[in-house]
Image 1 (cartoon, rainbow, N blue to C red):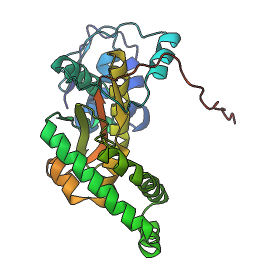
Image 2: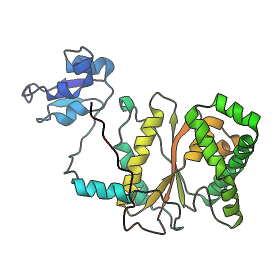
Image 3: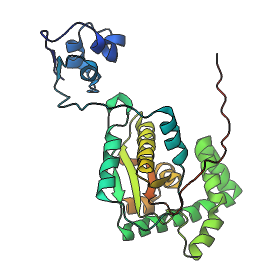
Image 4: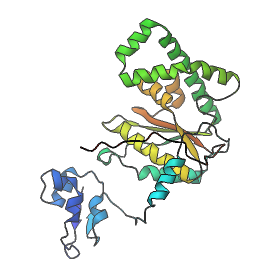
Length: 284
């Protein structure tokens, strides 16, 4: 990328060099030389310049950052952001989707890759197909966990984290089945929308999608809406590559689902925060 510094504006404060990991840690003496070879386009050098002396080919525009919320406002938002498992049928407005898009654009990503995409599923027939595929997948996993041989094979072939996730998901499948027979939605919780966060495989794709999804959940709370992670859906795509589910999701070629969540208007609103486990900080 091309970067130039207007020497008539520059006051030689060196803030741009402090903000750039290339000049701080990669041995480059010149910001211009670093940008030309290895720049990731994060734009931090432009953002910190007090005189707007830097022109960057990868940064077409900037916008001012206003004051951040205080501690009480941040904690209140975090307390209000809980998993929602019962939604009103009201559709998610296009204005809301636009806010979520902007929240995604402002989220951090490894090496500024910004590779995670957003796929909004709103069509009732598509949601129904995904719901049916998930229930069939849970039935299949339940049968897998019921036999010692297949259970042992799963333990040996899966990571401990994925294995315990499978066992946990299968333990509650009889309850899901009973709920489905009563006309309930035990997998998507009757949400009017499902948000998929697909993208190509990369070193930080799962972490990027997790950060992005949490920022979206906070934005939803600020809008009076709610959401819930779809861990079973991601597990089915990532670990088992369950074909009926993948067909229902219709992902772009070469993309995987790194995170997913349902969203909409909650039928109930939290008035108080339940007690949480007290976290200890270990100082060394």
